Structures are given as structure tokens and as C-alpha cells.
Image (cartoon, rainbow, N blue to C red; front, side, top):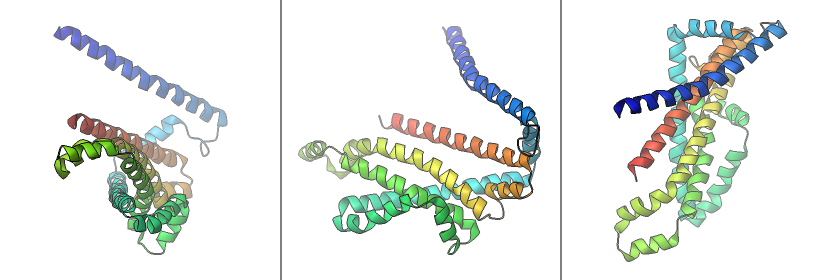
Length: 259
């Protein structure tokens, strides 16, 4: 029985690897053919040259310092935006006067282009903190709208039933409110993380701090170092996919624990 389980596990692992490696090999081949056809490395370097550049960057301390600091800035902004979004959602849902004055402002934030915010925030905040502030501003409306939708979708009959059985506030929160809000908040956090990452890197490119992924992108563009530009872009994509995967696992685990 154990041997059969191990065999099934190996087969499933092999299928998973094929699903990942086969498309990757295909698109690397397309990239290689396109680079050879273009014949202009400055415009489109080959995957090999970009890979070599990435390996050269990965063994330097400045590379990891930039990666860690960029991640820290974006995650701090994500946390700040999530907290503010939750607070504002509760206020606008509970108090009509707060909804009257705050909801339009939040919708204006959601409608404003990220570039405009970066340039405006640059007048008030130091370069080091701009990515965090921008990430928070991009996340805030997403969390606000998700939580508001969740609060509005709570079944009043369940609340009446909880009151009839005198469950108390803590049990009502755990058995009625949280299950109703979980799906909305999970969706909002997943969407917000992607926005926070993209907007944070964009803020680093436009207003480069001393150590940041966006700063290295800006330097590579200015120096016309295409291989380095592509290498840093690959780093951004890998980190984005990693963050999404980690978040997905955390949310899945939290759902299992609350069943």
C-alpha cells in the first residue's frame, strides 16, 4: 500500500513538472528564435545572455539588498492599506455620515492613475517611503470594496437566529460574520497584493530609492543594458508569482483551520 502511494505521488509530481516545464521550454524557444531573427541584442537579448546576467546579479549583496528592501516596502504598504481599508469599510458600513463623506474619496483614489499619485506623493514623502505609500493607496480601495460587499451580504436571518439562541458577540462573530466575510476578504487580499507589488515597483522606477528593484530597472534602462533590464524583469515576475503562491497557501490553510 505504501509503495503504491509513493508511486502515485511520483506520477502526480511528474505530471506537475511536465505542466510547468513544457510551456516554459516552449516560450524560451520562441524567445530564442525571436532574438536570433531580430539579430539586435540591444532590442531583444537571448535567454542565455539574460540568464547569465541574472546569475551574475544573484551572487552580489546589492542584488539581495534591493530584493529584500523592495519586498519590505511593498508588504508594509500592503499591510497599511489593508488595515485602513478594513477600518474605513466598517465606518462607512456602520455610519451613514461616514459613508456620505468617505466613500466618494475612496472612489476617487480608485479612479486616479498610479502615476499621478506617485508624482503627488513625491512632493510630500521621501523617496524611501514612496513605494509603501503608493502600495497602501492602491490596496485601500480594493480591501474597502471587498469588505463592504461582504458586510452587505451577511444574511440578516442568521443574525436573528444567533440572537435568538443568545450566542453572544464572540460566537456570532466566529460563526456568522467571519464565514460570510472570508470569501470577500480572500478575493480582496489576492487582488490587492498584485496591485501593491506592481504599483510599488512602478513607484521605485519613477522615484528611485537607494536600494530597490525599480532603481536597478531605471539604471539598466538609462545605461541601455538590455540583458540586465530583462533579468530584473524576470526577478519581478518570479517574486510576484511566489508571493501569490504563498498567499494562496496561507488562505487555503486558514480555510481548513476554520472548518
